[in-house]
Length: 425
Image 1 (tube, rainbow, N blue to C red):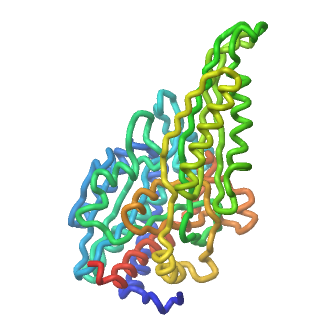
Image 2 (cartoon, rainbow, N blue to C red; image 1 turned 180 degrees about the vertical axis):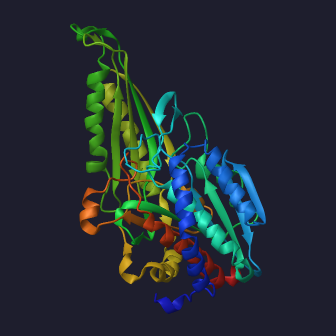
Image 3 (cartoon, rainbow, N blue to C red; image 1 turned 30 degrees about the vertical axis):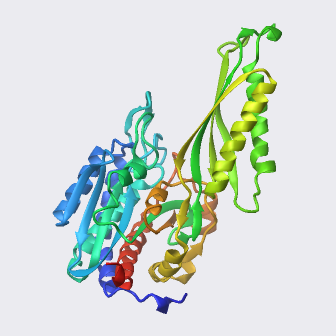
């Protein structure tokens, strides 16, 4: 598809001018959120600032406390047309910041019973500031806006505290995508894996599903010097860990899609001379196909139980599905590429590999077609990328030069889509 297949919105030049004029304010919002991060389902200050901003802009509807702390705003344009949705996530991570910034986070709080540092180590502060900027830009152009834009500010993308529900799934359940229902949804994520100024995209499966795995091996406690009087769950657990490596490497057709089964934590025993009653293992399962996802779950369960049975140990396998595969609608992605190309230029728009990380934006994509893309934040070209800390690191760094392209991209996507799809009104 060529650029001429999707004409630029009539508001294009006005969007760019308004975004440029607002750049300093977007930077200020981002720094404020960065200095005052909040964890999932606890984004009280952040959501309060967002809701007050939307009301000040004269939004037609502003709904708060969606999925605990989420905010949904509706901006109706002055011209008839369809509805499109834009989404930003607001929550931070339980990470102690190690970046030397004047606005670095010093926040500490309780998370799942532990005292932790809190940091926007994944860039959601940038996402929130960008979408607030888009809201102001489009509110200022509403007389020429064809259709309506739904703004979704989402909590708990990084998962809520244990024992709580939250995030995109809960927002959908509580009607964030209804009344009115958008015809499409767009979202972005900043990443240190791309150079500053680059936008990355991928049609189809773009980010993996994510599932929590917990395996408990039930043995029989005995003296470490006399293992024959008990059943050793530690040795059994070691055999299970090794066996699980064959699920992906020998039982799954990796020519179709990649997959990962990882055990990230093992806990069992209190003393060097006591074989314990049980061992608990926790891990993650990632895949890019929902059928393969279910197949892996079945194979992991069967293998862990069979190995344990061979050692005369018991085994309990619990797999909790978290996020589905993030699938960018191929037709929507292809249609909107000219918009992204206009924003950053043909040389700065890149087709990127699949990402084993996951995103609950996938729940919105199960309701309507969606496009989720990446914005590079790392300066210094190849040398900068080689030493850049990844997202979720305490040393994760966002060059604020990414904010303006983010505002322009989301605003242009919304307006181009609205004007190109009058029949969906």
